[in-house]
Length: 256
Image 1: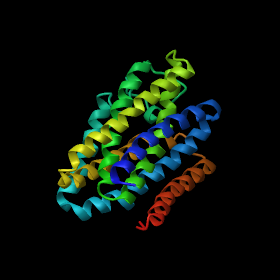
Image 2 (image 1 turned 135 degrees about the vertical axis):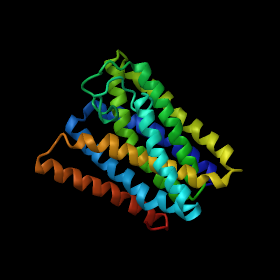
Image 3 (image 1 turned 90 degrees about the horizontal axis):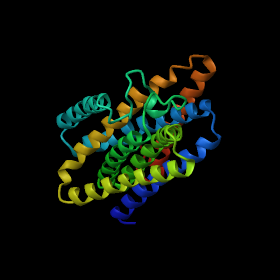
Image 4 (image 1 turned 60 degrees about the horizontal axis):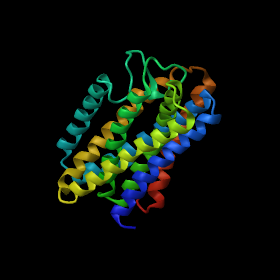
């Protein structure tokens, strides 16, 4: 497939898979099982960042500029989160990137959809930037985004239910929100085709966003369970997430 075809498949298909997967999980998954899914997502995110995205960004861009972009990106996402654009939350004690499904904390369904659309749009830009570097990097980036989108979409789906949406309406609106991923990807592709020098910078931003989500949003939620069994499960699944990135890289012919 061409680069554009890969971008279309991963951005649209990945968004649909995340939403449909979250809807199916919401019907039958227990809160503890959601926690297991989060642990895997953390490993996939960190594996993609440190084994694939950063090495490619450093290889094709200026080292100082790339590392400064990662640092600035982490600060940027912190500010966005404070401005209620990243985790769709109105309260300082709201945690886990929308995964705390048992309490609405006053969040409206419409706010969730607006915030999720923004997030998906950024994801589409990151996917396009990665595919324009290499197919292998694009697939790894897309899979890592899907891995963390499923638990997030799961939380968003349940918030919509708590806000009065029917299951069918919540699914329809979440699918509509996922189209923002495709819009971001197409915009990035049309702009980046003549601006290849910006690809390392966008990869650095992708690394910053994934690192921030994993470390600031997802990992703190794991600390709520401190028993040895839960800790071993979390570490094992984080390792499995990292291993999946290594396997994808190897299968694509560019081992991590």
